[in-house]
Every structure is written in C-alpha cells, then in structure tokens.
Image (cartoon, rainbow, N blue to C red):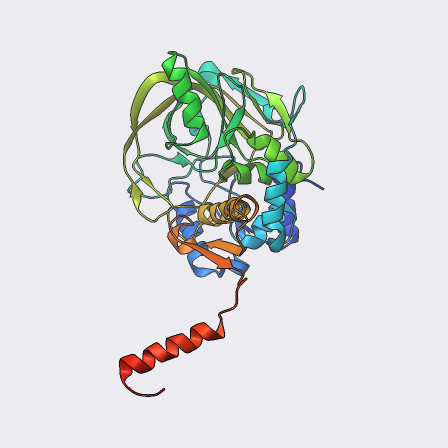
Length: 375
C-alpha cells in the first residue's frame, strides 16, 4: 500500500528500527548539521538511521533528516521494493506514468498565511555549513513549476537560500526543467509561479532529485512508483498544484529578468559551491499542516543522504538507457558515493564471447619472442 504522507512513512521507519528520535533540544544553526554529519560518518551505512529532532530551540516544529536516503535499505522502504527490483520499478514508472488526482482540499492547507502574515523565519531551516553558508538553506524542497506553453509540470530539488521573511534566493542549474520554465517566462517579461513543497510522500522526494525526460510530469512518475495517483490540491495564490498531504508549502513568484546574489553553499562534493547570481523569489503565501514536520536533506559531503538518493535514482536511469535503449550486455551499474554519486560510474558487463585459445597461443608466442626464452 502506498504511503499517504511523510508521517505514515516515519511510522514505517520507526517500526523497522530505522528512525532515531533525539528528544534533547538542539540549535538549528549548528547542532542539527553537526549531529547529522557525525551520524553519517561514524555509523555504517547498513545500520544508519534517519534522524528526528523533536525539539529545536526557539521553534515548535521538529526537523527530520535522512528519511529518504540515510541508507539504501531506507530508500527501498520508500519505494516498497527490494534493492534488486529498483531498476525495474523506475523503468516501468517512466514508461507508464499515472496522472495525479486533483482534490478540493487537503491537510497541506490546514493553516494558511498570506501577504504580511507570512514569516519564513518561523520555520526551523537549518544552517548546514556553519561559518561558510551566508544563511539557512532549504535542502529538501520540491520546487514545482510549469511550462508556460505545454503546462507540463516540473518538480526538482534545488538549493534555496532564506533571504528574508518573504524572500528566497533560488539557484537552478542549467539543463534543469525548472530553469527552462523560468527562462521562457523571462523572454516574455512574465513572472514564474513557483511552489516549494517541504515534507511529502517519500516517493515525491525521490522523483524530485532524479533526472527524468523533460516531457514527463514528476508527480505522474511518482504515482506510478507508489501504485496510486498522487493527490494534489490547487495552490492558494498561484496557478499550480501541490501534493495535498504535504507538510509545508511555500508559494510565490520568481521575478522576471532579475537576479540577486545567492550563496556560497556547502555542496554535495564536500567543497563550497560558489556565490551565484540566482533567481529571486517573492513569497506570497505559506500553508502547512497542523503540527508540521520540517524535512531536510543531509548533504555537504559524501557520504550523505543526497548522494545516496542521487546514486540509486540515476543508476536506474542509466541502466535503462544502456540495456533497453542501446541493447548493451550490461548486468549492473553503480555510481560511487565517494564521488558524490556524480564523478565515477562502475559498469558490470556480461561476457558474451569467451576468449579464444588461438588468441592465448598468439600472445604466449609474442612473449617468447620478446624475451628470447621459453615460457
């Protein structure tokens, strides 16, 4: 049965002894990052749990981290499959997407704040690279945009800097679907509606960080992965749809043809990503569930949650391309986490032609001639 929301998945992690609750108060600007880093560096991957910070000093909202990719076993719990079936499940979901189901209302809008009521400083957004990041960053936000022509939705995870009570800096790299939507609107001098979803059905977070073909709606692929349509609700202030059971949703617009300084930010490679001139988001509305949970990705350097998620999702896409599209005799692919799941790819290939005995004799003969003696 698919998970209804993040809370149901947290219960599943608890039952599997994969969730470690931290009841002591923690400071969001250094202790959350420090505890998370220690957990990832010192606990072997097969035993590494997700983390639930119950009490964040100065806030009434808990923070959860590592809930999608603290380990491959947690990733598989999110997909409800065995690790050996991940490639197949992703491939089938991309080939047979399941459109979202629109509903009139949902828990994501149990609390609504608009205009001057919005204050993003009420959210316990952690500082991840203490002393280096210029501000707290939303790391697990699922950024929703739509193509102004085709209306096809894109859901991607990008770095989001808190720059004011109603202002965000949004960095979207080149070749990302969200950037294409923004640039199309920029050419027409129009703002780009945007919604940032924090905390949802785990499968939505997984598709958000994966590379999918541009013509695919990530929420439709998520529906196929979970085996049931994702329920979506219309945003309050912009013409977009978001998961109806999300914990927190930030709605706003990206200013047309205007960039502002954003970063630097501690990236998944273990190095500081440089300062950038990035998109500026004006926030118009904040909605959230009663007693929401704030979800974050642990990144900054491998091993990390982001590199674990990225590796498995991209492995599935690469495997499908090599085997189904190019028809190569590949048995498995693996992105090494030590490279942040980006630099090193290992490919296992099935041997289809055994080495001939004649070839071996020829090589031995060449060695004898070069050495001047018999082997």
